[in-house]
Image (cartoon, rainbow, N blue to C red; front, side, top):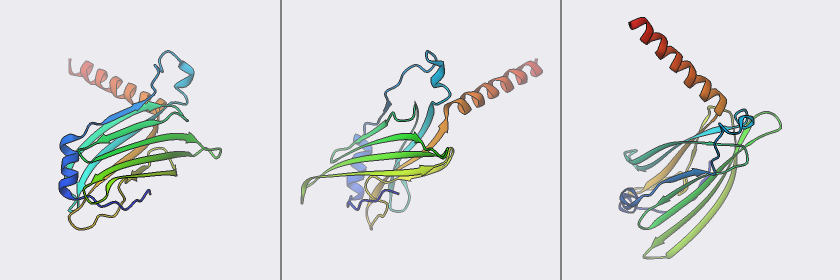
Length: 179
């Protein structure tokens, strides 16, 4: 997975918790208006968390976004001293598998070093339903530090719609039986 080693104290990340503005976006179009896109559309489930070194969860946000291959889903976290902006772009590979291109940008303002900027890009092969983790500040955490963890899962849009319709049918059948 993506690894960058940037030190961040618990207080620093605590400030992120209270000052965070999360925006998740894909340049969305109404898939109902373009039936051909339903077959290629994808859902990217995102769970973003700020985690202390003892694995205590300070903050979490869960989102699901519909997109199509080649169209990025953007996640932006803004804190008092840090800005994390990442784009996740899904693609279909020729062998039928999937891949996710993760592009990350991090701005950190520290009294000792001033503003630091880091950028990265990684291509991650994955299967539908496979859970992967992305760590914009690095995956290792030293004593007294917190980290940002972004959990991602890619699913076909059509499967999600079929599952939702199946659940609605089951609920309707159960209501009919109860009457």
